Every structure is written in structure tokens, then in C-alpha cells.
Image (cartoon, rainbow, N blue to C red; front, side, top):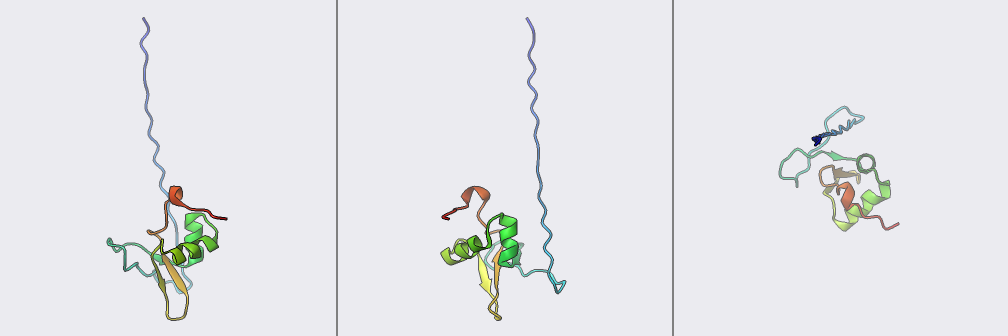
Length: 93
């Protein structure tokens, strides 16, 4: 009788994003996230990280699905950690 072997392999994937600003300063931190380590970025940068169109970020902001801050100059920043996971992304286009 022949013996059978079972082999199990595990693969880990790590993703890193580099966020650069024109001023060279660090991005602001989200005041809502408890850990205090969530970066606030421009909606266009958040769209690139979430792999969604920029308009989707604005829809999520309007629906209250992500943490955001409106700056005194009228610009918007979005919390990277509050972006929906890829399985939660809702497309209504």
C-alpha cells in the first residue's frame, strides 16, 4: 500500500503605498480612528489606494462611509484606514 503525502504552502502578500506631498511634510492623522496611525490623504490618492474611480470616494464621503476632514481652504482629505475593504466596495454605476 502506497503512502500519500499532503503538503501545505502559505503565501503572504504585503502591500506598501508611498504617499508624497508637494510640501514634503507628513500627511495629517485621522482624529476619528482610535489607533491614531491613520493618514489623511487627498481623494485622488485614496482612489488610487482603493483602486476605485475618484467619484466613488466622494460618494463614500457623502454617504458617511469614510472618515474625512474638510480643510479651511475647501479641500478634502480622506482617512486611508476607513476605506472599505475590497469585498465591501459598492458599485452603483
